[in-house]
Amino acid sequence: MIPPPADFSRLCLHTMTTRPWALEEAVRRYAAAGVGGITVWRSAFADRSPAAAGELIRSHGLTVVSLCRGGFFPADSPAGRARAVDENRRCVDEAAALGAPHVVLVCGSAPGLPLAESRKQIADGIADVLPHAAASQVRLAIEPLHPMYAADRSAVNTMSQARAICGQLRSPWLGIALDVYHTWWDDRLEDEIRISGREGTLFAFHISDWRTPTADLLEDRGVMGEGCIPIRRIRGWVEEAGFSGFNEVEIFSRRLWASDQAKYLEDIKAAYLAHA
Amino acid sequence: MIPPPADFSRLCLHTMTTRPWALEEAVRRYAAAGVGGITVWRSAFADRSPAAAGELIRSHGLTVVSLCRGGFFPADSPAGRARAVDENRRCVDEAAALGAPHVVLVCGSAPGLPLAESRKQIADGIADVLPHAAASQVRLAIEPLHPMYAADRSAVNTMSQARAICGQLRSPWLGIALDVYHTWWDDRLEDEIRISGREGTLFAFHISDWRTPTADLLEDRGVMGEGCIPIRRIRGWVEEAGFSGFNEVEIFSRRLWASDQAKYLEDIKAAYLAHA
Image 1 (spheres, rainbow over the protein chains, first blue to last red):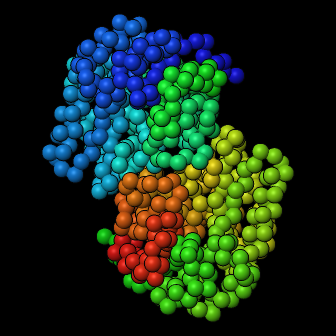
Image 2 (cartoon, helix red, strand yellow; image 1 turned 45 degrees about the vertical axis):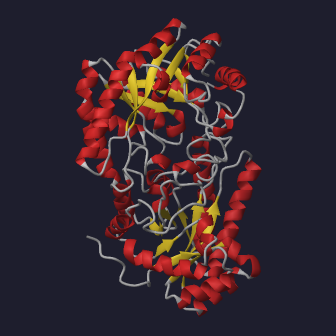
Image 3 (cartoon, rainbow over the protein chains, first blue to last red; image 1 turned 90 degrees about the vertical axis):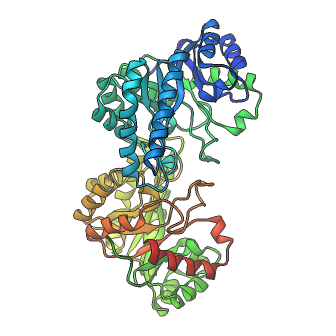
């Protein structure tokens, strides 16, 4: 039996979770709710610099957990791939300025390219960004995405694929962001988490829930407990594997974005204690 | 380079692909189009018995390729699981009466059950049906379903899981129905097809395409060539693995069902030669 979280000190929210709130309101509300951490999406920099965003966040006593998101490496031309690498270096710079220890990578996939080619381009792209990440002391976290995103968002669809890239590039600056929404179906998940923990690549842990039925491939995630993912059990595996970081709530949901965000934040806190 | 199909003799359509046509019209149209085979969904028995459906089909010179679909084994009570096994035995009887060599299994998943438990119940359910299948000379074909259906349609989501069940139950009456829509993303697919061919479990091959974006989890498949699945390459792997059965077009699409079905059938034939 895995006990519930003792408090909200390891609870982190992604700014995208409460998308209707601009960064300043999100930071103020999260801090008032006792949430411990925040993961910043780049869209939050629309009206302030990454450095100013970092100051704002720390002045409210919150921890910057990560920056979302880099990646999208595959492209059908060398120029396109070079642009992606440049963009990822900028993303690393932003993370450094923000004070985020790592950048989450949604690795990308080009519908016109064979998956094997997209996967090769992803590893090549990460290899090209890694020296700058290391020099900036910003880690890169590959997020395996659900296979339903294989065509256009990420050709890295399992922990084992992410782990293979980490094994190929072998750098303390490269690891994995594990999201239960993307990986809960995988019968190898428990083993992969254990191995990844042993290899020191378990950098981040994202939670949300899978609703039945799911009405939209992108924006119909559920709050923990609204679906069928055994979130607490998976958190148990992750912690047994040595992970002691934040539990990051990352929910894209048109339904929930349309609801009262203050109440939604309270619901997330209750769901966190009950199901995470 | 894998050559295109020489003709339509190995082309099979699922009755669900042209859902607006009742069985009689589908059979007449497929035969007139020179299509070689038909896979019958149980809903086609609404107005005639399986035996009469089989006679109708053969009288038009078509081959009955399979019956869709059995499965849905997991349930949260022993009574529910027993009902599922009974239903699958009836399905075997219908396949025998129809003259279908196998029943495709969409194995099921219960959102309230852990996936590992659903997977165990699936293997148990198949084990209970297998003696009746063998006695009836009807094969059972496990269809791995895309991970996006893990919550409610099938907890068997990869070829490797299907193969593990085949390995556990070891019967010449048990194999796999491979569908490119469900499995194309899997980096183990080529290896799994080769092994499955060697083990003699490659019973059926379904084709359609993955559209980008995909608007609906269930009913937005594409005709071959409308999406990004390397269908011809996968057919090459399947044939190298020894498969010489039908290429079954199984497309669920509200968009295409709403279109002129006679034109749609011609489009499928053209797409088959161009992309399958």
